[in-house]
Image 1 (cartoon, rainbow, N blue to C red):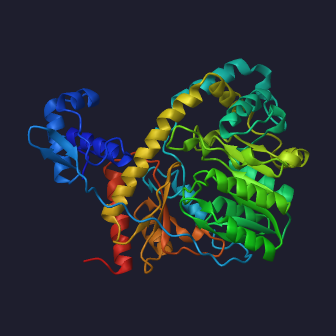
Image 2 (tube, rainbow, N blue to C red):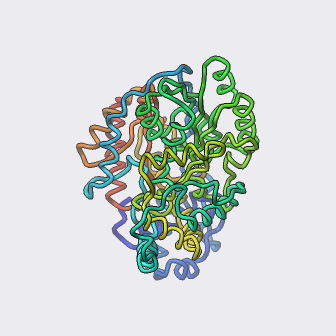
Length: 477
């Protein structure tokens, strides 16, 4: 559906509300006058939008009663099944393409569905500009100095307060500021493991983690992972009995690329299991603030009683990736990680730390989160519906409850590495499944970044990739 006319845009917004469950099957839509007020459009625009939604099969008219959401909506794609990697340590390979994917994020003519980077429309750019200006005016001589590890005292105080929402009672002195979450993960790995050591990870897993493991000369041990509830604790327990695992790294809240979230009892079981084996658990919680529901899920760190969980996060997915402000709770590796941070990069940027501290202090972060959570939920719903409409029959799609990425499992005949190269030639970036596996598995899978504004260009890009996938699968007519 092209989005050139006002009534079409209104129809799309109502469709998103239906996808999100605001209006459920059988519910009556508000009357035309109320909808006209809600969308600030004319009654005739609402009438045209309703007719379009009726043509699409989303709503139905009932005599002298109004419009209702149809009981039989578009069929949601099935979710992928639990992953079945070969559970043995392997060196990381096949990551050369990743740099091309992330570079595409800076190309203005490229439809950016590959790297998990939010479009500027989803970030509080003006508020950050004001925070940077305020910090520059108030910074004085501080701006000309390093904020040596552990980092800005005020920023660490603000982060410690926010950690309460994740179920973690920590003091500012337990926090070390880093240059983003990626650096936090690398520092954590360096603190607990050495070259040649085995690191247990989810499968599929974030390619930035795989690159970190590769750069440090370590080996990855992929563990079966459920797209809804995360890593299999049972499979991990069996692996620990067989292999000399030195660390486990995972994302319990809205993992990348699956979007899974571990239930509380599973988080507790995981932390207890690793503590019993005295194996450090490195937690990447970069998406923890981006749940679609009101209540923020607890971090794995909230279940830690021994100091064995190293917590990593950043503001790159919520405020601005360019600020390069992250943090780490090193647990019992505090002194070592502070030193590693110092010898690696001396300090995180001073102005960025001051700006983020001010933004948090004045409540801007919470206001932004309320808006962006619902925006990401809408985008995930719209993109999922588009995939079900334009991609090959039988395509499976994850159903994340937070974050902004979806994972697609296409028919076996589709090679998404080739699909990625074909898409790049058409200025469309997608992330092939093989870069999310140390052993290059998931060649018929791909990840899509949903944090892009819905428009004609985005829809046409999805149609193009869907058609190429159908050709690859031999399903085109």
